[in-house]
Image (cartoon, rainbow, N blue to C red; front, side, top):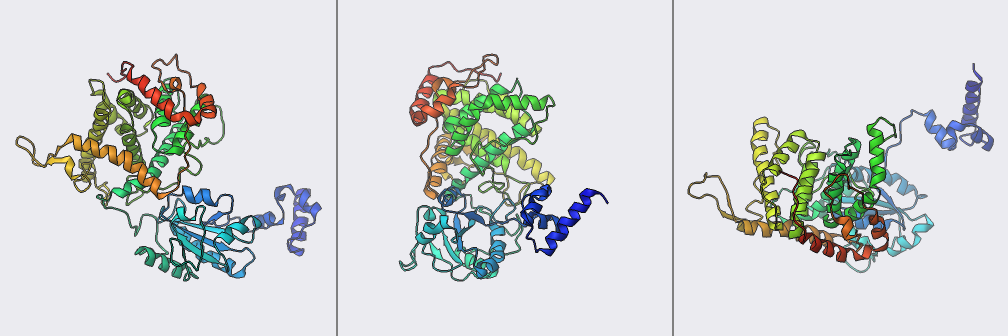
Length: 519
């Protein structure tokens, strides 16, 4: 027997006979288990990793931030103490319910954020006092925003934060939730099964959830670009232009800020991509927080399909493009058009989709001088895609039965958009649109409603990030491309001047002669 095996056997024997209390010398000499006796025990056992906790552990430092940023509509906070036997026994029950709502594999993500706060930790003493925690475990329910900088007084009567008095088992807690939401969630619900999807297309309030899917799509698209090593000398310019468009017009403040940071370090990203392309190993592809930490989350809300294979990323990307089209000014419309067309052409990995979109871009013969024309072109293009996919998916049986492709917007959502259903000389099923009404709808739906309804739902920090007007002006020469070096100074020194800078840039764009790259 080798000396290494003998030493290992002696350590194992000593560990078992001392009930895990290894002497310090033994721990320090056993380098594979330097973390201590608990690590050794886990290694001796079956080797299976511990089950992950689905409930999110919060403390006084991150409590407000997590609850203000969550896309969930409701929140449950369990206040417990780590020394409490009843709390330890209750944790598996709470986790059964948390598994349904929390995480990428949740059956019903984005509905309820389930969290835990350990009141036995000194850091959480004031937090637990604010919410009048008098016994363990205590369960509180309410809108996430009401917990932020909030408090709870059990003697004040019924408020927006409620105490859950009947949740001592997983079944009883889920029954309480179902009564509160008039829902029928089950403990054995699986992802995309028995799901209560929001299918009411006439509910304009649903667009508020799309802000999270736009963030998800933005982050996913950038990860795809990096993972597929798509940044090359001939594609760098189109990506920089698209990122510049996002910095100014992305509807998510977090994405505007993160995109600006990506632009500042773009040279470093490009170098890494070039090394990866040439075969230089750099380990796992790095994830960049282009829309902040925690994004992508791994699930969709507004764009969620009834199966895992439908909607999702493609829907989120379309919503992003529509939201950009209604935010640009007249002087920016042609630049935004060419930027989006170039981006899809160079970085969309679905080959057939990319070619179809390229063809529609190439068919445009005159510049877009008005933002209205660009927004309506994108809307019309999207409907042409839907019309094509209607036929293909119907014949192949690949359509989502809960979300069939339709002409957008549906009559229930915008009745004034429909001039009539048929006219003489037109097919009986051809729609005659009132394009003025359509444009008004697009501006409201993807512009005003998308952001204002979102802001009403959660607290949004008023943080702006800006670039200089010169940084935001796209070059048309690959050789002249310089990733904006002034962006770093603009972000650091002049972030509060974002509005004025963007306004100046827009005025500057209006005076420039439109340039086209799609002939």
